[in-house]
Image 1 (spheres, rainbow, N blue to C red):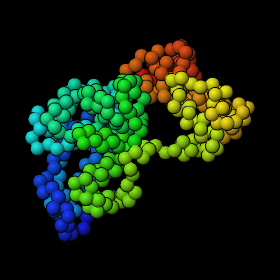
Image 2 (image 1 turned 180 degrees about the vertical axis):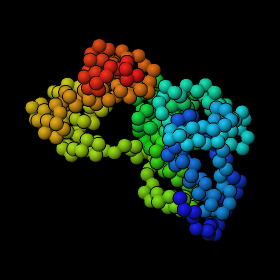
Image 3 (image 1 turned 60 degrees about the vertical axis):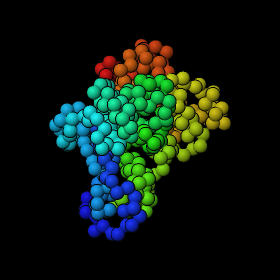
Image 4 (image 1 turned 135 degrees about the horizontal axis):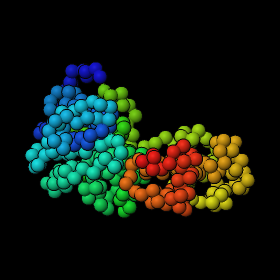
Length: 328
């Protein structure tokens, strides 16, 4: 990334918050490097554009040393903080699979910092650790869409949303990827004003800043490559009803078409029957749960709308070429 132009005079910026704001990042091994960079680079850029230190960044691990990211890059880290010190906000950054996120030391550190008044945030899989630490009870939050199913299974009462990020006065959660750029824009604007935050985003060629509640994924039409209104209604409903699948008659009624016409739409547009498409969506959900959750195979079968573990296993082997236990 090229360096920004020399800082220009910004009286509004200098009048707001002269004291540097300290932001920490707790890195879980395998953290997503892009998500981490998107969450910290805007604050570094803000310092350079302002010509003074607005934000101090610190990096923490379970022990002092280097924490390895998803791509193999290593970030030098301090040991987890014992006290608040000057910390204003601390983000926990996690990637990979939820079955690797049982991190008691990090859970304890998050609870301790929250009690001390530090604003706690989670990036990508980080909100899962916040939930495990008990910091998201009765709170709306978000997480990377890939981990949504495992999060709901682990925390059935979770108020999970599919937003890009959720910003509360003392909690921040973000879906990861490039969404932290949107969140950082909001946080910088809160402190330094919208005009200054716009300069930071422009430096990263981030010209279209998304709103907090914008979707994380492409639309159903884009993901499936279809545009027929009835087919879109049915596909969206299929994704929402994996645990309790609806019958063909109910789906046809929702789409305001006949069952026969619904079958023709799937064969013509998707190259699959109604049943095969529904089963593929449910099995894909099962695959994510096998990889990401500690649920037993029988529990996963139920969560995917199969009548028994044996039925799930037969369907899984036929679809993916291996058994659920082999996948796990």
